[in-house]
Length: 395
Ligand SMILES: *Cc1c(COP(=O)(O)O)cnc(C)c1O
Image 1 (tube, rainbow, N blue to C red):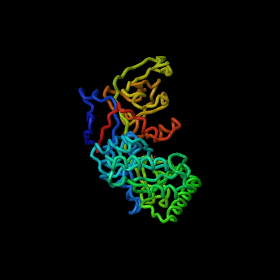
Image 2: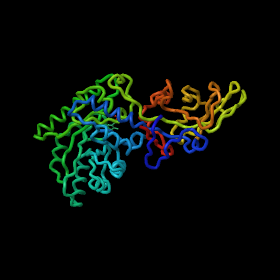
Image 3: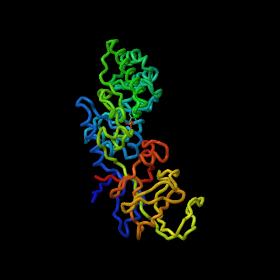
């Protein structure tokens, strides 16, 4: 049996018994053993001089940032990446001391004060932003320089200074007081594409930018370029740090990368049956009466809905696992509840656990399955689970 560890603000999962079953109608289960395994697999895969940054933005892709960050650092990651200042502060308040890179843009005095106070490491994307940083740190009489990470745009057309201006930009930052260059980095737009042409062009531009910087007599202290897909594709993209999100959570960024290393999914989505009933042939189910029972069937109501992050567009399409078997969801998924046809399984009881994502016995349903049905990517599925669902850590 799984041992269950309580995480702050979370009721530990109860076994199915007469009183406890309703204490949690639905939850996200986080397997810290799988998380630790994935980190170790990634660390082994990298050459010894490359460090692993666990990207824990967006509440660790919905897994719970502090718990994930702690486990990642204990298991061999040495950096953490977040998108925003509040995400970084949450980690520091959670007692995490590892270096934290803020991947998003920061500009305001409040953000810069917080960066200095909490010893966070910002991304600098433009000369203007660099000047603002230096001025505000000056006005604060900040003594030790703030480590900053220079972001180059090599073809993503998102944050960063154009790679062709890399030399000038780095030279400017180097001359500004209160800032010290900790790394130079860029981000790839197509690393998950089996056709590597566009990625190779970005790689070439990154190399050219670095050559330009070196030609000015500046030796970049640290370089990084790879996300999960690039990390699994080509060791030539690893440099000094890889910034890995999705793979940390046990999912593959693309089908053709599944053989690179072994990963275990960390997240499972579970809910309980709250009522079981028999409905006659011809009975309509849920809002809009989209589903009409073709025969007498046994219907189970489950306490999870689109307000928890189960996409309404999966209505009448998704399957779930109960007692190790696949059953079909029927009728429109509602805000807090959904219905199943459990006719194939005898004697389903109220309180039984339904697995919406994860495995039961030999059956498995993954975020990739949902992503395919919804014409989206697994990243979006993971980030979609709302905070109404407690995150329950299991070892
Ligand atoms: C989110 C993000 C990553 C992680 O991407 P994955 O594809 O999830 O590995 C890496 N770098 C930057 C700049 C990011 O924004």
